[in-house]
Image (cartoon, rainbow, N blue to C red):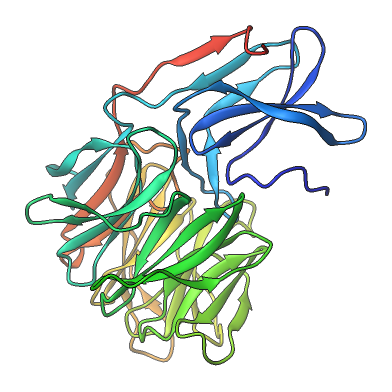
Length: 364
């Protein structure tokens, strides 16, 4: 492959009505186009703006990143979806039967919710008022008060709490490349770089002892020392890994069978292997007491009773809990578990989503 540009979102090839070739991509949430020579795979000249406030959501594709709601033809037709004026998602509490218990704050352009270990706070990525990019915010789950946590003009997303609740690891997009940072909750300390490289690196989780942060890069997961000392562990071939509270097992998604299913293996030696989903599975999460494992199977949330204190991983029959309307473009992290599996916080698309705009006059 050939690197054309560094962009955290998916790029789209397009041809204008006049027969000229272009590459469409986003900067923040603005849609840009740049002349493109298909024969030599080279970009020409400068990019120009096409539209503002494009809907951009976290993607579930390998190595994550973001996916822009744009589509283009080879005869000059362009379609895109803009962000709604009141936001595109809402944070909703559901019980084990899928009944709505309440909402956290007002609707907004949210992604990647993460509940703190004490379940008193929520970290969330939120698009700024101008629709240019995302910052991290902390939400008091008692009174729904929002406070801004990161202030870098770069795009920031994917927050994950350390097990002791003192730090948050998250993704930062600089010049189209994703790096991993961490920042203390208390005080005014500056963010620290955890992983910096020339290729996209996405934070995936923490080990329960807080000594390692799981990151994904180049198709593999690594365990990186959170204090910068010692060697990293890996590589591990898995997606969306999550480690059991006792640190002995890792649940993850893999499409090795031809579709995404959820597996469990010993950690960190990856001893044994159990497939725990049978009709598709993604986004596994453990209950905080380690007695249940949850995952999404299509539009259903499934609960799996498990035993993690034996030498061999044990699980009972899977129980579908409820169906929920999910946005297929916002699937890196869409839900969180609370109250020992009695409540779930979902980031759900608003029913009144913005219309799709179709245009043929997008080239100046």
